[in-house]
Image 1: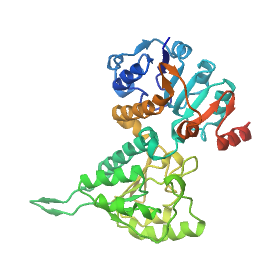
Image 2 (image 1 turned 180 degrees about the horizontal axis):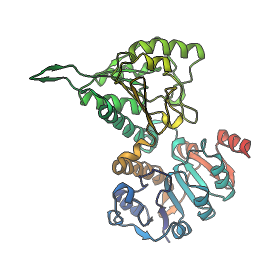
Image 3 (image 1 turned 120 degrees about the horizontal axis):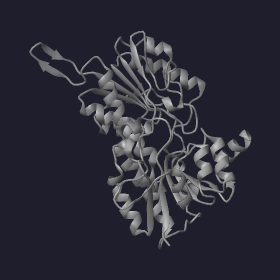
Image 4 (image 1 turned 30 degrees about the horizontal axis):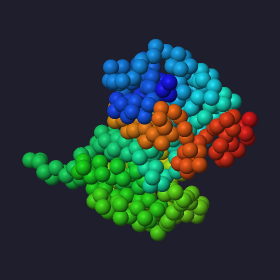
Length: 376
């Protein structure tokens, strides 16, 4: 009897992605798994049921969950969805454990084995499974498009009968995957691009994309490729020196985020006040509260002539390709756990162990365990 991998329709507000695509269905089939899909699961991503060749379409989420051995999700399931999960089944998705400790407690109580894709160790072997990177690339691309759309100026230099129009200057703060993709896209659109990151190792990456690296003399190299949190004195120095550069920007894109923590406030109101009228801020860190002190997550506001746009769940706006990339991340993570049509994870594997959240009625991640038990 083949193992059943189920994909429900996402229920989180505004979520358009789906955790499956056609080529992944075929590959799971070769691993001995049967794919079940809730009817309409891909409709928000403009993917009808007929686009999922090889999957069995199930009429309701309740029916789907009762048949599922493994459930693949984009966003964390709600408490109501967790209640429908079959006891002892497996859940894989971006589970946002720091934001939803009560849901992790419910998964533990239901004896669900859950894997949080965002907890996968960021090592070379796991790059093909890295949902943070795949979805951040989409957000960076989209941020540059948003900036060009909201700006009252052209991005490229234009030579016209009415004279030459100078190119816009785009400044990008935070040169992770999202920042690099924002640089590449803004450059393709013809803007002059400058970028800053507290990790000095990103300088060569910035320059390789044709952008100028802003050097402030502050470094914050952290473990696992992340930046550490700056001290208060470093933050003040950073803000003061960045403000001089930001004052010249037509578009500012901020991407600085610390997993599981509020986004660092690196753009104070005084810096915004120093920006030119008609300048645009795209705050990609809005999910964690934003990098700008004036940011209102999910809203677009105007402060002293500066447009501050703080979109949420940006990858969902590019739902077709975001779903495809996410589904392939899931496939690459799940493949080593499927052997001869059976679910057989090696919990000693550092990638599997790193993503493991709950198992056999226990919370396996120590920091999450302390958070949940503290909440309880």
